[in-house]
Length: 280
Ligand code: GUN
Image 1: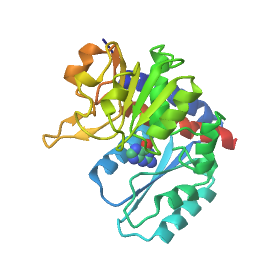
Image 2: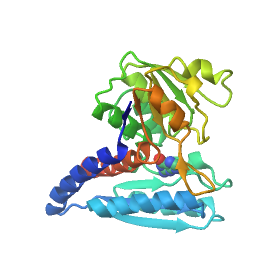
Image 3: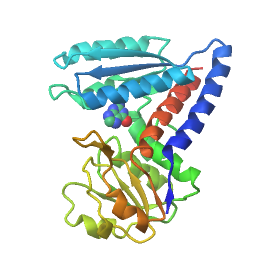
């Protein structure tokens, strides 16, 4: 069994980003990222702090718009429209989830496609499904980069994705299809999850349920990607896969923390640099 070390790869990617940004800055160009966070969900605030810290480390200028949970939808739209026009901002990220009175789809469509570094705008979602160059959502893109680093080619593999969200499962499906894998996608209404997961050469799980995937649900020698990040009452972080029992059965597995999480942030940095280059 080999660990897919997302932390190590993310450091390599960050170092490359730092070099790329140094060259841009020497030409007087500084990549800029605006982050919008609404409400006071502690996990979202932690993620946003990590994103800001990563920007600072590599030399991306970042600004944070913190808004209260009861803010009006019109006020959020007004802020995004201002950033759409701001020439110092190349990328705009709206941290999800948004409070329940806000129409998330409407907000995500307000970010212009050229600054959509999360790849959530319908225009970019469509381009991904057509295998055109676009902004790809950071978590599934990070998974693909991790597989590539360990020379795992999804072509022809039986893959199973557990979780069909717009931000992880669905773009992951498109990326794997674009890479010629056979893709099976499971969700809350799937009748027998185990029948699907057990067949997979490559199993990717991102639903936010600790210990959802147990040893009996995994094929011998499978590659396991755990996207879940769950904080236990003790403060310990665990994924959706029962790591201790599943790890001995597989050929490769991502740890939590230190697997997909750091890759998400590394891909955000790359997407921001891409937005800057597109502007030039
Ligand atoms: N919330 C959880 N994951 C993500 C992500 O990748 N991007 C944004 N914007 N919000 C998230």
